[in-house]
Image (cartoon, rainbow, N blue to C red):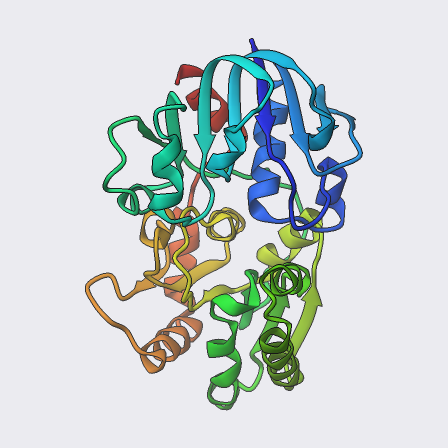
Length: 332
C-alpha cells in the first residue's frame, strides 16, 4: 500500500533529523509512525522541509506537490488542506492533533472517510460530527539510557504556558520543605515565540517570557531549553517526579507517556485527556476543582514517601510504542 501524509506549512521546518535538536510532539509522532508503516508500505510525507529519504520514508516540500496517487491519504491537523489537493486516494483521513473548533471541521466531514482523534476527551470536543470518527493515540520511541534516578528532582517538559508558572511561584515553599529539591525545565521558547509572531501577540509573549525567565533564576532550578529526544530520555530517567500542573486541555500527552516509561512518577492536574494517559502516579481534580495549594501538598507528600514511590515504579509498566500504533492503523 501507498500512504501519503500531507502536512502543509508548519511554524518551523522539520524532518527526522530534528529529533536530534528538539521537535514538537505531533511532529515526532508522525515521523515515528511513518517510519513504522514504511517497513511494509510505501510512505511519502509532504511537509515543511527541504526533502530527503529517512528510514525508507520520502519527505518532500509540501508546495512542490503537482499530482500523486495513493491508497491512503492522511491530512495532518488542518481539515481545509484537502481543498484542491491534486492527490487521488482510495481513502482519505483527517488526523487531528489539536483542539480546533468543530465549526472548522464540519464543512469537510463528508470528504474524509474517517476523522482520527487522539483520546476519548478529544472525541467529546466534536459532538456534532457523526460516527466517522476513530479514536487513536500518540506514541513515542523509547531510548535506552544509563542515567540514574536523582532523589527529590522534579522535571517539567511541556510548553511554558501550560503550567510552569504554578511550579515556579510555589518553588519557595517546596524549597523550604525539601532544601535538596531541584527542578529541571525543558522545552524552550521557540514554539511560543512563533505563535506570538503568527497571532500578533509579541508584547504579551515578551511580558510572559520576562516573568518566567526571572522565576527560572531561582536556586535549584536548571533551565535546559529545547533538547533532543536522547537528552529527554536522560532527564526523565533521572527525575524523581514528573511535575505537570497542567492548565491546558491535553488530547494525548506524549510527555506523560515518556515520564511513565522512564520511571518519572507523574503528579498532574486532571486536564483534558491526562486522566486517560496517566495510568500511574497522582492525578488531581478528577472529581472537581483542585487548587494550586492542593497540588503543592500532593507533590510534597509524594516526594517524602520513598516506599510509595518504589511501589509505583515497580508496577509502572506501559507500552506506547509505534509498533503497536502502526498495527492499529493498518487494521483500520
